[in-house]
Image 1 (cartoon, rainbow, N blue to C red):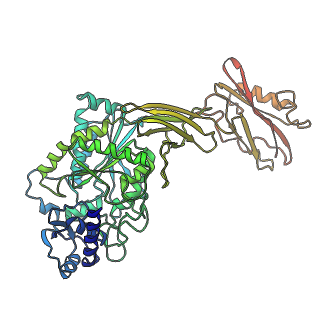
Image 2: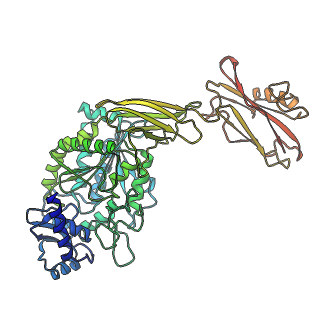
Amino acid sequence: MARILIALLVASTLAAQVPLSPGGDPYYRAKLLTASPASLQLVLAASGYDTDCMPAGADFVEVVLSPQEYGVLQQAGFQPIVLSTAAPLSALLGDIPVGYHDLTAVHNILLAKEAAYPTLCKLHNLSTEFGPSLTVEGRAIEAIKISANVLVDEDEPNILFALSHHAREITTPEQALDIIERLTAGYGVNPVITNLLNTHEVWVVPVVNPDGVNTVWTSNNLWRKNRRNNGDGTFGVDLNRNYPHLWSSACAGSTVTSSETYRGPSAGSEIETQTIINFSRARRFAKVADFHSYGRDVLLSYVCSPIPTSVGGHIDAQGTALAALSGFGTRDPSAEGEHQIFQMKEVTNYAYLIEMNLAFQPAYIEAQSEAVLLWPMVQGFLNHVLAVRGHVTDALSGLPLTANLSVNTIAWTLGETRTTRALNGSFDMSLPAGAHLLTVSASGYQTQVVPMTAITGSTASLNIALVPHAAAFNITLSTTGGGAGNLNLALANIPAGTTEGFTLFSFDTSGILGQGTLLGLRADVFTINCLIQPMLPGGILHWPWPQSGVYPQVPWNLPNGSLPFPAGLQVDGQAAALGPGFSFLGATQPLRITF
């Protein structure tokens, strides 16, 4: 306690000495000498200076400064020691024989992989598939999908690697290329990699922030943000402070446009952020790894917002185990509103930000060595066994459902959600070992509570069929009248096992509805034609089962004018379902409508 009080006292004293950051484009990487580095780093960050992922030694703190910031710190009595000055990356690293890859080089490698492995690799333009548009400077965010039978969207767990949210962290795209190379070279050779790609879909996004990376290569190697024009003479939003979850918390990014950690004008405001959010919601990733530099740490759960003890401890334990595979440490995230925190909130809690290397732009050989150091962690991440994989379907049709999932042992408090994937009703969960109750719900269906036990190193398989609230076979009929013959029909909850169905109509409405001679209808000539006509070519009132997955194909309309009857004419309608051998499976309640 005494140490904490002393640290707070020192930080309070330093806060009076450190002026607020005036902002400006990054220009110097500098060192500030101090007897209290941890406290000074805290105060600098709170005052708007760029210390994110920067080292602090026994007697110094590193910080990235604009010329304006450099000046105000000098006036405040600090003597910043300049370690490097901003320059185009191509000039800065031009003397490295085998160097880093710029945007064009990364794109060409992805194209080459797709060409060399056409059944294993597929290049995707996320901007056109999931984004609102290209970036503000007209660039695409690209991803490569790596999976056996890659051209088919298979019902398999999806894994995401996202890199280069921060432009100056140039080792991260190299890490992406290393992962891509190891997976493609290992398929068919390494049995573990082969099995992984036979059973999973792996997505790699080498550059989330292409506009910022272009700026790093062409004008300013210390550039961090994207290239939004903030309208006040400043540019850029810190993409890894712009994600919606906890965007406005006490530990979120800066509200000052000139700050290097500016969180943006609103949650999820940026094109790049929106693209990754839409992509993630569509794929529902089972695992997410987001690489940054630098520090050699795996970042854990939330910073200062509350997280349920059970899941917070689980996230921390899993992250600690992951970090140990490459000898890394762990720490809390730098802020809230980060990418992996969004993933924890909405998609998967097996989501981690990994800080790699010991510098933003080390010699290229160091980036290569770092990839070797990281490979055990990457393998552990890829092969980590999640507690459960399941599917939610409609109990009557067998079709997949978008359902909400909650677990009794995890009492989320900040709007955290879990949802099945719309395409196939699938879900994946990372849960602490032990007994759980999984509550599954969907609009229009009866909620189901499913007991399950999570066993470390084992995946439980759950297939959950939800029963509709109104499970009775029913028909809906409507018309706008006027004798136009525009009859609309829809069926719901068709009995399982239906092989054939009839929709019958009668114009004899003189009796009480439902008390007819054929099912609930008073059969007339038209009713008989409904039974006979389907056997003739072009019959429109009888459909084989299944037809496009439903009986009949709905919503369904008679051709305009096919029932040219005067307004006011009444008709009764009813549907019947038959099974194998023309066994009777059920009929709807009859309906009466008026043209």
